[in-house]
Length: 402
Image: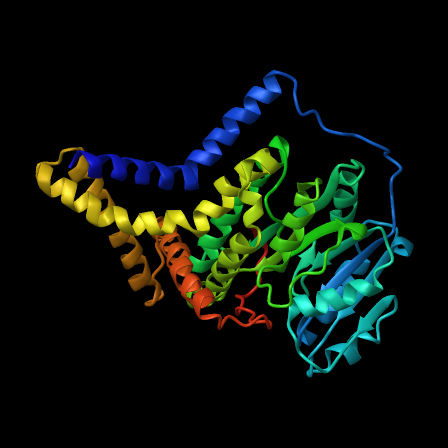
């Protein structure tokens, strides 16, 4: 019984640390560093304004082309220093033909559809600028995004800059939209602290940039191209920095089913990334980067979801031994778990009936996130996750931003 208690408390600690404890620890470290005057911002040459390439890999995106191109051409950065490269491999809806009508847009197209990473590997051969900025076709960039990204590259130690992903939100958001918005707000804060401590652990594919000379061709079956590209830059001795003033904005997933589809793919890619980046688990070689990587990413994609499942029977056994209805510590924890998952189940039930209670969005979305890890792991083991675009359906755009 004592052994079971020890395993239970360790498991509960790991779960807490993965989702909240790491953030609390980061906050404390950052506050201490500020008090000690450590980690002051690097200013560099304020006149630094290099040429950049906006790089978009697109498959059948004709509905977004006009808005995306016009948005890119309206950004606050000298337009004679902004190149646009679109790789449209496999598109058969007229995407490449429509793009060629715009001035200042280079289009590279092959009829064969081999997936996003194959298009990126091929397209990088045509990038001639010192900085390349990756973005999605269905996202708009903030007015100062290029300027804010370039500003961080003044520091020669910075090899990659990640922008912020923002979600259009509205009062009537479904659980997917509200949950995704809340999740990204929390992630944004963690990224700010990660960057201040040392380095962000992975960039958001909606908007990130690297020094072109640091590009490493990525394996053709890679699922999380943004994560692999940015982490390999960090493993080369550079840092990944984060600037929320550079942002890409898109609508949330249309519903939880679409969000689950997206999360399963991310989870399968997460497992694949952990396997391929296993050398990054070496604290002796990568130090702080390894600590951040394991705390922020690896635990969430591997051990923590498993422990969430295992602590239920462990907690039940301990609560039963203590007295299931005596409301001691273990019974309170057990009934707390029951209440949490009941709230998630109720959220699912009401969502399917178009009845939305925001108080249920967090347990519902949390459950969906961790369910996707198990489904993604199964898909990774089967090897049947396609590298081709599997875009989740998105909701309708609104004015507010989360």
